[in-house]
Length: 121
Image 1 (cartoon, rainbow, N blue to C red):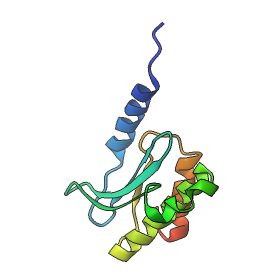
Image 2 (image 1 turned 135 degrees about the vertical axis):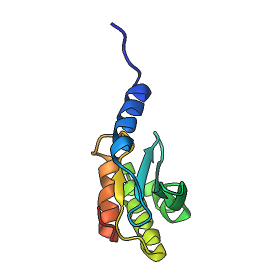
Image 3 (image 1 turned 120 degrees about the horizontal axis):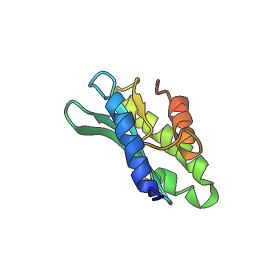
C-alpha cells in the first residue's frame, strides 16, 4: 500500500474547502498559511483576485514579542493585527478559509485573535 505525502493530503483538503468558500467584495475571504516557523494571514477579494489586508509573524509588531511567546500566542497576535488592519480599511465581515489545515492549534488561535479584534465570521 502506498502512503500519501502530507502536503498532498493538505492540497486535497484545500481544494475541497476552496470549492465551498469564496470571498466577495462585501465579504472577503480570510486565508491562512502555516509554515513550520511562521503563520501568514490575508484577506482576499476573489472577484478581483486582490489581497486587501495581510499580516504575519514577520511583521515588526509581532516579531518584537516573538522571542518570548509561543507559536499559538504569536498566531493570536497576528489575528488581532489582521483584524485591526481590516477594520481600518472598512472590512468587518469575512469568510474564514482554513487552507486545508485542521481547525486547532495555531489556526484556531489566529481565528480567535481575529474575532477578538472585531472581525465577524
